Image 1 (cartoon, rainbow, N blue to C red):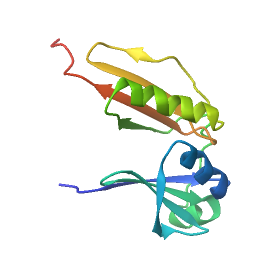
Image 2 (cartoon, rainbow, N blue to C red; image 1 turned 180 degrees about the horizontal axis):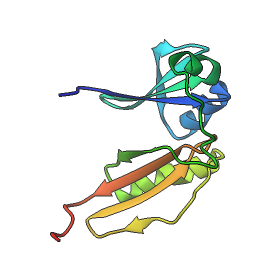
Image 3 (cartoon, rainbow, N blue to C red; image 1 turned 90 degrees about the horizontal axis):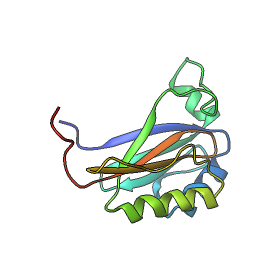
Image 4 (cartoon, helix red, strand yellow; image 1 turned 30 degrees about the horizontal axis):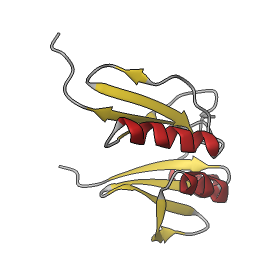
Length: 134
């Protein structure tokens, strides 16, 4: 099975994207960070590669969508507590991110999310159990 995940995210302005995520408390691996991309550490084996758009285009011949008007995917990260979910959403708002909806409490799972500077949707969840059986 897989040991790591790398999510590649094209960014129009790489320095602005780095500053946004640094304001949320994330750091970057200097071995995988330069003027073309930034290896953001999300967890022990979870990484987001923020890629300058011109560099990201070298990996695909497909057009990029405008994530502010279309959804291709969204990224969901687990959090250790409801407070961590709320804190990250508040930091995202303060750093210029968009908060597209309200927090949701499903009993066994609490979630909320934000959109980064380019509209990529990041969902944050804290799970306290399993969903009820259908």
